[in-house]
Length: 274
Image 1 (cartoon, rainbow, N blue to C red):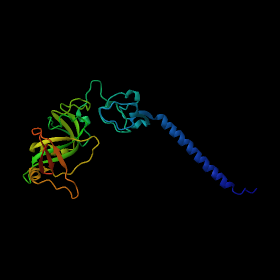
Image 2 (tube, rainbow, N blue to C red; image 1 turned 45 degrees about the horizontal axis):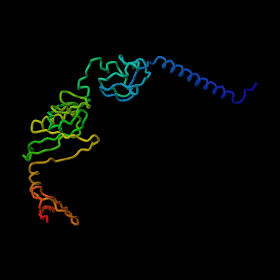
Image 3 (spheres, one colour; image 1 turned 90 degrees about the vertical axis):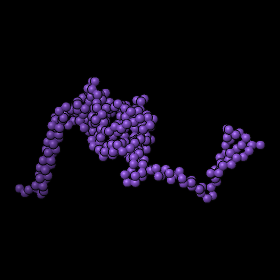
Image 4 (cartoon, rainbow, N blue to C red; image 1 turned 90 degrees about the horizontal axis):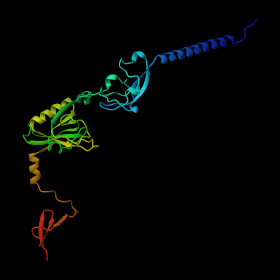
């Protein structure tokens, strides 16, 4: 009896389809078995800073293989809601029991200092600290008055910009506190900036300039010397541009109500009142 044409090819296709189906079924069952063995843990949905109170939208549940679960991982999100963090928790990281403060525990300022940064304090009297207006969380510029070793001139210069205030006075880190800086100010700086700050503090006088909330621009200033101040005092003011009118100021002196004083630029004229 003669074989049908193409029967061998049909059988081969059937065998291949059978093998593919078997693999798909095996892979599905393996994945289901892995899902059954996974452990649900609480992870951070966003970056959570230190001293933050955990809200439901900050955390989420994820199922991960048992060998990847941290020994102290939290497995119930209700157990962390309302608690206060003492360390920073990065997004997608497992939340651990040691990430939170216990009852009565107070974190130190070191938890507020990011890796690679330093906290350093400077004196902050009423004059140096903008009349006690500076509070934790503010951004400031640091100005120093010192004798320039090159030109031997007393110079005032903005030496550091966009510096964050971590705490004021005796470690107060509450930005809502009524009391601003009046004795000391703790700043967040790089190690290099810390060295500069100490050097300028030893050589002269430091002042703080409070920055606007949304101002992140920096300036490039050479500073001001006593010579610059003398030059500004001696040099006459620039003449008004051609075609512009000289402003006229009229005033009545309190001690002489019988005259009117008229000021045109640097000229003064008295006009008697009739």
